[in-house]
Image (cartoon, rainbow, N blue to C red; front, side, top):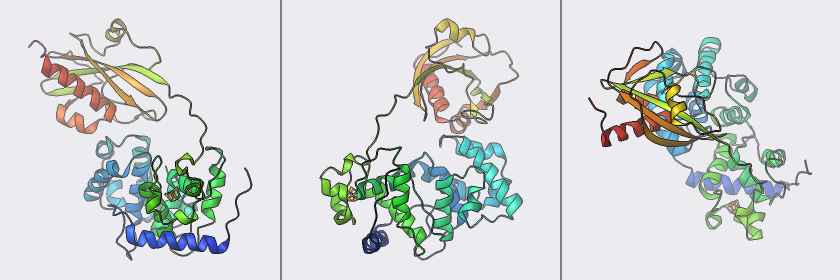
Length: 362
Ligand code: SF4
């Protein structure tokens, strides 16, 4: 790691003061945030941090509100049937998080009397809490001086100091720069101020330097090309896969399966599918792999992007008299649309649109 830049104490103090003053005036109003001066609820902070892993604030907000309305405490969440929690999570993606959420609620309720640990190390020991989430909860819920570093904070540090090392190699350097600003005064507000600056002002492609409280301190702004930071190595192309989704409809119900856990989308209700592979599926192969024999027809394709690969799902549908199958869970269509992960919801919607345009013979 290159030597970390030295930040003079008075420069550090000025940056902290400017950013905290800006935060006092411009903090985002978020569903999980406590009002100014009020103590944050560790359950709400934890739930929001788990939901926000890989999910944007606008997308996570209605899920957060629905969860706290239905399960207002970690004890209530722990008491909820697992299937209901997984179904309420459907659409948020990254379903390992939902399984970890359930495991974490179990650990806090069963082993810790319903109280979250109030240190970074104690939080880190809980299921599914990585370094970032543990630091964020420690700072925001318990006012611990933790170094909370996500992509927003990395970007702000890379720009403030015009760090020339490319990501991901620069991660350690950027974390060390961020650590220099962490202190015992208002650690929760400091963490959230940096997050807000990165999300609202120091935006990835179009930083709003004219509105930034740190413009006079910022070397990337001084360079005239702030968006050129953080430096990045060229990304490898995301691999692409192909699969087949089977939609079986009978009397207003659709035949679903429960995906095995662990695994991608593990534990979630889903349409039956083929293996997902690099080569496209021919119609003949798709029909040979169908869960039941029947009058199958192609209903088009849907595309979906996961973190590590993108997917084309060919959708095949059948309806009417379908032979019994022990693995199929017959679920009302409306319920299935709400309970399945997005990729399967898209496939079911594709099949329904195809059916509406050209109904199956009765
Ligand atoms: Fe980001 Fe611009 Fe502010 Fe620098 S001046 S921290 S580039 S918004």
